[in-house]
Amino acid sequence: MTAKFYYNSADRIVLDKSSYLTLEATETNFYLKDDTELLNPTIVVESDKLSDNINYVYLGGNMQRYYFVENTTFSQGRIIMNLAVDVLMSHKDIILSNEFIIWRNQSVYNRYLTDDR
Image (cartoon, rainbow, N blue to C red):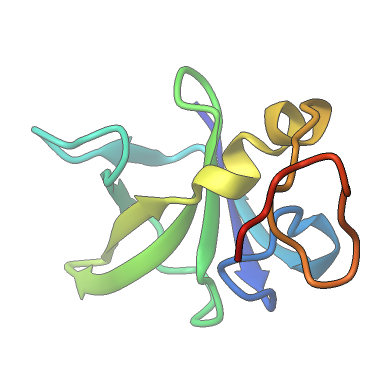
């Protein structure tokens, strides 16, 4: 499993953060902490060479998700990161491939949809 560490300058509610990401490092020397979760995992990186700017992580392998870095701790040459899944970026292709009917919008509307407000 590979982890890519980024600096993310986008707001959390931005769907596609690709153009806001700056790759800081790619690391294969890490592991998941025991009893961790898929949505909020904790990873331990065996390197102290990571930048302090890292606030976003992509975990490949079986996980294949993007994560926000919630908390970082340094201990005995290891970096412990508590992560929280970024649902929007992790599933952006699925979200963008769907069509939606927007019931309320102040500028674009469908006069055939009932809107009593």
